[in-house]
Image (tube, rainbow, N blue to C red; front, side, top):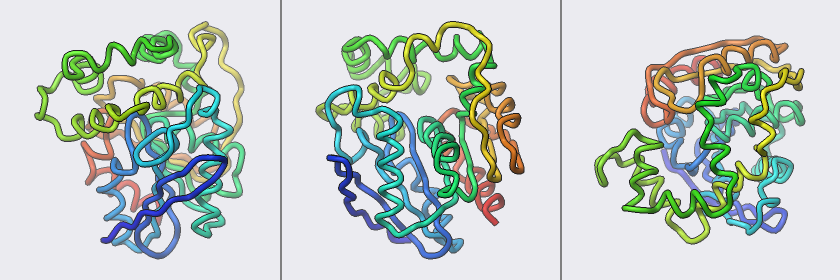
Length: 281
């Protein structure tokens, strides 16, 4: 299935957007440190099944603009980008699928613009209220989010020794050239300004107060049908934060576990495709 790319200009940035297929629209939102390419296995399957797929490179990633400054990555601006992409392709509402940061953004879209979200699928990242309720276990797993808050530190450490620390942290230490997905991420992050842009998503939206243990906030609710998918070998996100998301969903809720690492769109593409096609029917 042919994929075409075009540029959407909005709010002073240029967003590269991949599209494929015809039919009911499906919006795919990638996470850190990816681009629309992380969805390449899903795009083909969805388009072949009769869906119109829209998959942007979110700001700071892929071939989209990398604006300077932390404030450029506030969630309000990220949501404005997504709304602009949907308007550009003439989509009034869509089934929305997100992974990692894209899942967090998908939750926010469902909270704030429920008119745009017909169905919601979130991979890896649950409702932020459920994440807070997951307590110290999730906080320990999320140590890197606090580390990312210090300007310049991760930018200095990650690229050292041919990105050795990044390989160990994100992928359990594959040798250079051994893991194509790891190499793709490194190639993207190594471009001028790309690593800082990606880290600014964390700096703009996840401040140090996140690491103070308090009672979880009640949080906004989701009314559309929602599927949460968690992978059994995720190194960053606990199952509790996905399971606990059910209490924030007023519509039908479905939960699935997949035997995969955190990067399940590429590490378990057949299972992800099966779940998506079944849920979207």
